[in-house]
Length: 402
Ligand SMILES: *Cc1c(COP(=O)(O)O)cnc(C)c1O
Ligand SMILES: [Zn+2]
Image (cartoon, rainbow, N blue to C red):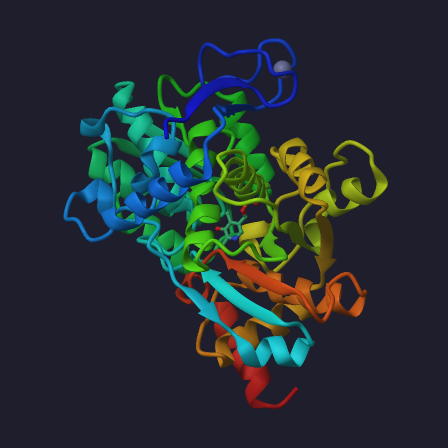
């Protein structure tokens, strides 16, 4: 089974000559579009079995949960690939929480169990490898902490310099410490993540590879989340996949992964995708419900990883919700903290942005959008140690029984 990908505009479909600039015709983000050859079911089964078998090998590419799927990724010369054995993530069943919420099944796919503690590694291995193959000596990103930590680790492995623009005072101490551990150069920017990203895209960055999720290689790695989830469920499609939304690259990537799995004959239907935002940073919920274009907001939420007021991938994410009959929902910071406490008490743990998934599930069940028969996977995006202030806040509140 050979897939072929064409780099083109995600909006007007015009082919693109380079990946590191928006569409020359309409200004939208690019994507690697699958040129699907129809695959017969037995060839699809054989491919999936071959990929599963790679896990037992010792080749670093086979040990990566991303590069195991290399036939479904844009081609990168193997000697340029930088991998930290990312993508081998657990799917944790949570029957008590499912019973409490009155749904048939709930499991957490924990992408925080990646080498640098967030899903960013899934895309970063592809973006840094492609940058290295193109001869870039430097990488740069705007970040609330996790993208920069991931970039810094992979860039260090690749022998590249790394520069991070972060919003001053708005990121967790653990994330700032982690990225510095890998040797990143930090530039603090006044304002929010959106201001840091604007400073990056407006400025000259002199041949440095931009590795935010506007880089289409990032989303190709992150789409493998869909494959990992399906593989862990023996290719049984869940009814719902619930994912937190900030800049909306990840929800776009996961939706793309499921659509490609269907196009390749690996599954025969799509799960519905639910994007959860924090109430203080919910421009996508607003636009999805009203049918308008993006109206940026000034983001305010304790869930710093989703404190994004002008998400770049909103059109891609909207297309994925349209394709999957999905929904977008906003939850309060109090609901996020309560959900974080429950995920911790289940022995799983995550950072606040990830806990927004469970808060969203509670809301969607109360609203009657989730039903008693639903089989749900929530995507936990970041590790519990990413934001220890949040853990202390949530645990203190739980201990006093508030
Ligand atoms: C980056 C991040 C998000 C948001 O992902 P987007 O692709 O920006 O929507 C959510 N949770 C965590 C922990 C993150 O690091
Ligand atoms: Zn275009």
